[in-house]
Length: 355
Ligand code: SAH
Image (tube, rainbow, N blue to C red; front, side):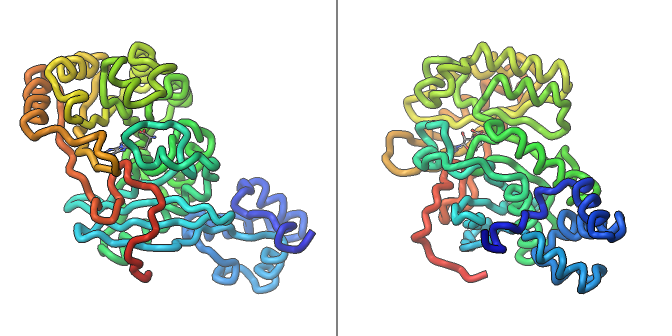
């Protein structure tokens, strides 16, 4: 075994394990806390930068461990200020993360898997095979990178995080929760869980698990239709997780957490742009307290799916309003660099903007 493969990834160790390591080499237990702080709070990428650690100890760390930090392979900047990162992982796989600036917020949109297994017909990521789950530190690094970019390019702090990049977060449950733990804990980035939203295609069993685990972040569900026949056509997951089961899982979520849910919903021409679908959505929204984000469709290629006409969107808004449901139209961001919802597909043939 060469030295490279015998060195352990230090960020796989808990604080306790790191303490044990320092005690085992005859050092002080509190050294672990210092190193942990460099890794998870200050997000350092090299042992040599750990300035309160002696040179001898840094060399020892270097001998035993590596820091498998992600590497930003390519940065693309949209005319609207959106930044898309092609993030290279230690094994060469690439995922994408996006920084989305608005006047009041800077949001990081992060990936949870390499590719996706879900086959939603309208999504570009679905065209990529699912390769693997991301590790907690790979998710964490996407956030840390966007934090740096927020101050570098926009001179503002990161305010929100959405798990709406590549992959299905609830099918990488343990790692997503471990990453969020590091992002929210005071020893980590100290962000409020209220500013984090995990978006799911609607994996009922895992929505219930979130409720059981008493998570403090927000939940969004990609609904797109509250009618089984239409939803199954759009999202094959609906065959095994139909609308009734989703309703039941959401009731369970609300009973335990008392927190409302956000539904993401695209209105497509000729698919769900009639009153029948709008009324079904309004009815579904009454199951538990909720709000609706009407997302603009971002075309991905073949033209099978097209954004509905503006009058149809207005019709939806009218019906929602009439039923006392909060619905907002969400403008698409970063379309010119394929950074918008559902466009993340590792298209690397675009103009390269150096870091
Ligand atoms: N797997 C998770 C998170 C990733 S997708 C989920 O399904 O929620 C993030 C959001 O973008 C989802 O609501 C998804 O339905 C939506 N989306 C996918 N492709 C899109 C497209 N081409 N245009 C607009 N929204 C899209």
